[in-house]
Image 1 (cartoon, one colour):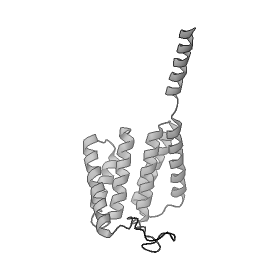
Image 2 (cartoon, rainbow, N blue to C red):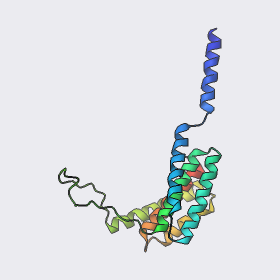
Image 3 (cartoon, rainbow, N blue to C red):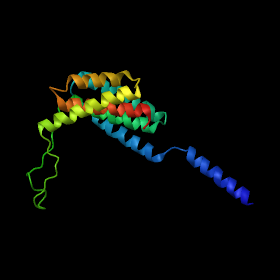
Image 4 (cartoon, rainbow, N blue to C red):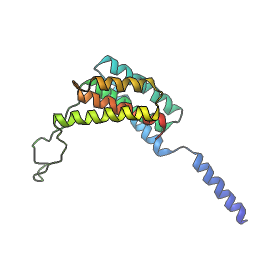
Length: 177
Protein backbone atom coordinates (compact mmCIF):
# COMPACT_ATOMS: atom_id res chain seq x y z
CA UNK A 1 0.00 0.00 0.00
CA UNK A 2 2.80 2.37 0.94
CA UNK A 3 4.62 1.66 -2.30
CA UNK A 4 1.48 2.33 -4.31
CA UNK A 5 0.92 5.71 -2.62
CA UNK A 6 4.58 6.63 -3.02
CA UNK A 7 4.47 5.63 -6.70
CA UNK A 8 1.32 7.67 -7.21
CA UNK A 9 2.98 10.70 -5.61
CA UNK A 10 6.01 10.24 -7.84
CA UNK A 11 3.81 10.04 -10.90
CA UNK A 12 1.92 13.20 -9.87
CA UNK A 13 5.21 15.03 -9.25
CA UNK A 14 6.55 13.94 -12.61
CA UNK A 15 3.39 15.12 -14.36
CA UNK A 16 3.66 18.50 -12.64
CA UNK A 17 7.34 18.79 -13.51
CA UNK A 18 6.65 18.16 -17.17
CA UNK A 19 3.86 20.71 -17.31
CA UNK A 20 4.24 24.25 -18.53
CA UNK A 21 5.76 26.91 -16.33
CA UNK A 22 2.78 29.18 -15.86
CA UNK A 23 4.82 32.09 -14.56
CA UNK A 24 6.95 32.15 -17.70
CA UNK A 25 3.83 31.83 -19.84
CA UNK A 26 2.19 34.77 -18.07
CA UNK A 27 5.34 36.86 -18.38
CA UNK A 28 5.62 36.12 -22.10
CA UNK A 29 1.92 36.83 -22.69
CA UNK A 30 2.23 40.14 -20.87
CA UNK A 31 5.30 41.15 -22.86
CA UNK A 32 3.62 40.22 -26.14
CA UNK A 33 0.48 42.17 -25.26
CA UNK A 34 2.56 45.24 -24.48
CA UNK A 35 4.53 44.73 -27.66
CA UNK A 36 1.39 44.57 -29.78
CA UNK A 37 0.09 47.78 -28.21
CA UNK A 38 3.37 49.56 -28.96
CA UNK A 39 3.58 48.14 -32.49
CA UNK A 40 0.19 49.58 -33.47
CA UNK A 41 1.36 53.15 -33.11
CA UNK A 42 5.05 52.69 -33.95
CA UNK A 43 6.70 55.32 -36.10
CA UNK A 44 10.27 56.26 -36.78
CA UNK A 45 13.32 54.96 -38.58
CA UNK A 46 12.34 52.33 -41.15
CA UNK A 47 15.40 50.08 -40.67
CA UNK A 48 14.80 49.70 -36.93
CA UNK A 49 11.05 49.25 -37.44
CA UNK A 50 11.70 46.40 -39.88
CA UNK A 51 14.01 44.71 -37.39
CA UNK A 52 11.44 45.17 -34.62
CA UNK A 53 8.65 43.66 -36.74
CA UNK A 54 10.83 40.67 -37.57
CA UNK A 55 11.70 40.08 -33.92
CA UNK A 56 8.04 40.51 -32.97
CA UNK A 57 7.05 37.80 -35.47
CA UNK A 58 9.70 35.49 -34.01
CA UNK A 59 8.42 36.16 -30.48
CA UNK A 60 4.84 35.35 -31.44
CA UNK A 61 5.96 32.17 -33.20
CA UNK A 62 7.97 31.06 -30.15
CA UNK A 63 5.03 31.80 -27.86
CA UNK A 64 2.81 29.54 -29.96
CA UNK A 65 5.52 26.86 -29.78
CA UNK A 66 5.44 27.21 -25.95
CA UNK A 67 9.03 28.51 -25.76
CA UNK A 68 7.95 31.12 -23.23
CA UNK A 69 11.33 32.33 -22.00
CA UNK A 70 12.55 32.84 -25.55
CA UNK A 71 9.33 34.61 -26.51
CA UNK A 72 9.59 36.97 -23.53
CA UNK A 73 13.21 37.90 -24.32
CA UNK A 74 12.44 38.44 -27.98
CA UNK A 75 9.46 40.61 -27.06
CA UNK A 76 11.76 42.65 -24.81
CA UNK A 77 14.21 43.08 -27.71
CA UNK A 78 11.42 44.15 -30.06
CA UNK A 79 10.20 46.72 -27.53
CA UNK A 80 13.70 48.14 -27.28
CA UNK A 81 13.93 48.31 -31.07
CA UNK A 82 10.60 50.12 -31.30
CA UNK A 83 11.81 52.62 -28.69
CA UNK A 84 15.03 53.07 -30.64
CA UNK A 85 13.12 53.66 -33.87
CA UNK A 86 11.19 56.51 -32.24
CA UNK A 87 14.39 58.44 -31.59
CA UNK A 88 16.76 59.27 -28.78
CA UNK A 89 15.30 58.25 -25.42
CA UNK A 90 14.32 61.10 -23.16
CA UNK A 91 15.95 61.45 -19.76
CA UNK A 92 13.43 61.53 -16.95
CA UNK A 93 13.74 64.42 -14.53
CA UNK A 94 11.54 65.28 -11.56
CA UNK A 95 9.02 68.12 -11.87
CA UNK A 96 10.73 70.11 -9.12
CA UNK A 97 14.36 69.16 -8.58
CA UNK A 98 15.03 68.27 -4.97
CA UNK A 99 11.42 67.66 -3.94
CA UNK A 100 9.14 64.71 -4.45
CA UNK A 101 5.39 65.03 -3.89
CA UNK A 102 5.69 67.23 -0.85
CA UNK A 103 7.84 64.83 1.16
CA UNK A 104 10.81 67.15 1.40
CA UNK A 105 14.17 67.27 -0.31
CA UNK A 106 15.22 64.10 -2.05
CA UNK A 107 17.67 63.24 -4.75
CA UNK A 108 16.60 60.00 -6.40
CA UNK A 109 19.73 59.85 -8.53
CA UNK A 110 18.00 59.15 -11.84
CA UNK A 111 18.69 62.50 -13.46
CA UNK A 112 21.29 61.28 -15.92
CA UNK A 113 23.60 63.80 -17.49
CA UNK A 114 24.90 63.50 -21.05
CA UNK A 115 28.36 62.08 -20.16
CA UNK A 116 26.77 59.42 -17.95
CA UNK A 117 24.37 58.47 -20.74
CA UNK A 118 27.23 58.13 -23.22
CA UNK A 119 29.17 56.03 -20.71
CA UNK A 120 26.21 53.70 -20.15
CA UNK A 121 25.85 53.28 -23.91
CA UNK A 122 29.55 52.51 -24.32
CA UNK A 123 29.39 49.91 -21.54
CA UNK A 124 26.29 48.28 -23.04
CA UNK A 125 27.88 48.08 -26.49
CA UNK A 126 31.07 46.58 -25.05
CA UNK A 127 29.08 44.00 -23.11
CA UNK A 128 27.05 43.08 -26.19
CA UNK A 129 30.26 42.64 -28.22
CA UNK A 130 31.81 40.43 -25.55
CA UNK A 131 28.70 38.27 -25.10
CA UNK A 132 28.40 37.92 -28.87
CA UNK A 133 31.96 36.62 -29.02
CA UNK A 134 31.77 34.48 -25.87
CA UNK A 135 28.48 32.74 -26.56
CA UNK A 136 29.15 32.55 -30.31
CA UNK A 137 25.68 33.79 -31.16
CA UNK A 138 24.51 32.44 -34.50
CA UNK A 139 21.79 35.04 -35.08
CA UNK A 140 22.77 37.43 -37.89
CA UNK A 141 20.44 40.10 -36.50
CA UNK A 142 22.45 40.23 -33.26
CA UNK A 143 25.62 40.92 -35.21
CA UNK A 144 23.84 43.64 -37.18
CA UNK A 145 22.49 45.22 -33.99
CA UNK A 146 25.91 45.33 -32.36
CA UNK A 147 27.48 46.81 -35.50
CA UNK A 148 24.73 49.44 -35.73
CA UNK A 149 25.11 50.29 -32.04
CA UNK A 150 28.87 50.77 -32.48
CA UNK A 151 28.27 53.04 -35.46
CA UNK A 152 25.82 55.22 -33.52
CA UNK A 153 27.78 55.35 -30.29
CA UNK A 154 29.28 58.82 -30.77
CA UNK A 155 26.35 60.70 -32.31
CA UNK A 156 23.35 58.89 -30.82
CA UNK A 157 24.35 57.27 -27.53
CA UNK A 158 20.72 56.75 -26.47
CA UNK A 159 19.88 54.74 -29.56
CA UNK A 160 23.17 52.86 -29.30
CA UNK A 161 22.25 51.89 -25.74
CA UNK A 162 18.82 50.61 -26.83
CA UNK A 163 20.28 48.66 -29.75
CA UNK A 164 22.91 47.06 -27.52
CA UNK A 165 20.27 46.11 -24.94
CA UNK A 166 18.14 44.57 -27.71
CA UNK A 167 21.16 42.55 -28.87
CA UNK A 168 21.73 41.35 -25.30
CA UNK A 169 18.10 40.29 -25.01
CA UNK A 170 18.34 38.30 -28.25
CA UNK A 171 21.55 36.62 -27.06
CA UNK A 172 19.78 35.69 -23.84
CA UNK A 173 16.83 34.29 -25.81
CA UNK A 174 19.16 32.20 -27.96
CA UNK A 175 21.14 30.72 -25.07
CA UNK A 176 18.08 30.17 -22.83
CA UNK A 177 19.20 31.99 -19.68
